[in-house]
Amino acid sequence: NYHSGKRNKIPKQMESPVTSNQVSALKSQGGSTAVLDGEEEKEMDKKPAAVTPDVPRAQTVDNIQDHDASIEQDEERQLQASARKEPLPTSKAAFKKHPLYVIPSVLNSTEVLAPDAKKRVCGIFKGELVYLRSDVECALAAKKWLYQGRKVKESELAKPILKVKARKKPMSKSFKALKSYGVGDANDGSEESILKQIQSASQPLGDGMQHLYASWQTDPWSPMAVGPDDPIPANEYNNVELELLNPGLVHVDLHGVAKVAKKLAIPYKPCLLGFEGHQGQRTPTIRGIVVHAHNEELLREAHAEMAQHLFQQEKESKENEILRKWKRLLVGVLTKDRLERSYGDNK
Image 1 (cartoon, rainbow, N blue to C red):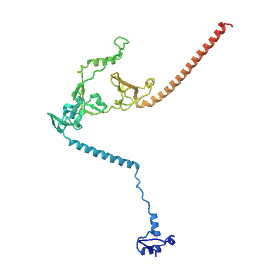
Image 2: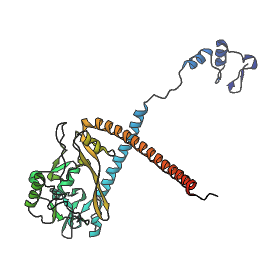
Image 3: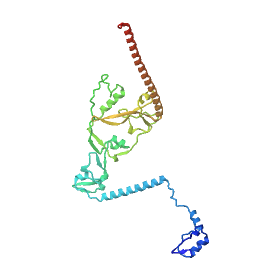
Image 4: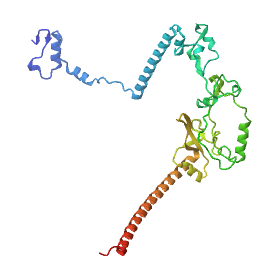
């Protein structure tokens, strides 16, 4: 009797591979058996192990990023919903930095309200209408709108949304002597410079105010493309601003590259990188030149050759200087020795 207790056990003499007849006999005696027949064991061996689905790593990262983005969007919506439920501020100072509401009296000198802001009035505070902070934007000068990729409409140039006091241009403290009477930096005696001076003198005097424009007074804008045979457009100071670089032009920032372009007769203009503050004044930072895109490779190759040539010249110059100094030293020693032998004391 192989049955003892509640579980069938296999005696020591049956520790050898169990036959199917022995397994069936154990099962017929009842209880739970701890023995598997050979066929079941083989079937279990044939069953493949659990495999994690092969998901591409990029797809997994994208799913995680999408999930994080959705969470951030949900949090943003919750914050906006909670902000809308906030009551209006009870003091004028609270309106200055409030993220949702604003009144006209706390706006900065360059901030304006959208034309349709009255359609979304949120209330009244001490006789002033309360607007949404999202309806406030900063007005910019026509020149600064170009850096934002927009340009003031021609019909809106005479109708600025704001006028603020213009900053005075700093006067040059250094004295510049003229080479001859009536000729200087602004007038080199040519007809072109004389014409520019006449045009600037013919313009009406400004009122000392700077005109500012809002975004609805502008249109999308981008610099005009420049062809290989087109002249390089420059500003009134005869340079090109890097932030307003036209398509078809490239900035080459290499030391002494202007000399190479001049020798190769390649048209170029100096490049204005920006402005820096020095002693309370803003000075322009000009570095490198602007050339047509098809001349860039030729210019770089010529500059590399010139740099190698200059390096070799400098090396030869240093060697010659060293030899000259050694020669001077040796000549001095020989001269001293000859003088001592000729005129020295014969002791």
